[in-house]
Length: 116
Image (cartoon, rainbow, N blue to C red; front, side):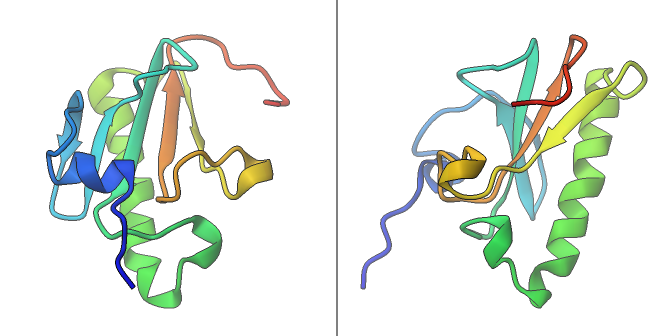
């Protein structure tokens, strides 16, 4: 069975351009093209994990890496002090639009609660 690369896999492979703000050997962070806040970044693992609900025990270190990096990126972008939100959507009802695990980093304004 052939695997059709997701939009995010194409961004990782540089087949589709993106405004990249951070990259290391495990993940890539870029600006969302349809921002939901003044700052809307997407942090994606380079390993194609479909969604958080299907992550496996061997993904534990990668998942921890993503959480540490999202905080580091918020500090780098200057939003750690005033606040930011990290969102992971899972499945259709959770708002998942692309079947590749990704963390949304939202900042730049006061964010309301509940979110949706």
